Length: 162
View 1 (cartoon, rainbow, N blue to C red):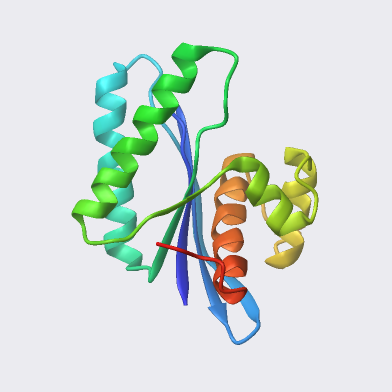
View 2: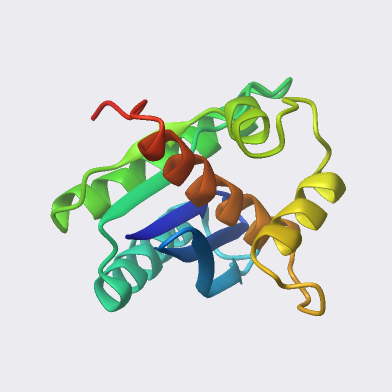
C-alpha cells in the first residue's frame, strides 16, 4: 500500500509518500516545497494545487491523508490554512482520490503514543521508523510522513471511515 501524507501550509508544504511492504515502511519520496512569500496568496494556492496534483499523479497512491489546520490564536492564519487544505482536497478529489484528514494531536498520539509530542520528538521518531538516521528531514517532511503513518496505522486497526 502506498500513502501520500500532506502537511499543508501557505508558505511551506510538506509531503511524504510512504509504502507499506509486509510489516516495514519505505519512504519513497518527501519534500518541503517553499513558496515565494512575495507571491500573492491566490498564486500560492494555485501552485499548491498544481504541486499536489503532480505528486499524486506521479506516485499514484492508494490512500491520501492530509493534516487538518490546527486552531490558531490568529483567525486570519487559521482561515488561510483552511483555504490551503480546501484547495489540496479539491485538487485531489478532482483527480479521483479520496482524502482523509487528521487533527495534528491525533497524528501525534497515533504515531508516538503522546498527543503532546514536540516537532523535534516527532522528527526523531519518524526518522527511526523509516530508518532515516542520516537524512536531513525537515519538520514539514516529518509532519507529512507522520500523517501518512497515522493513516496506515488507522487502516490496520480498521479505524478509517471515508
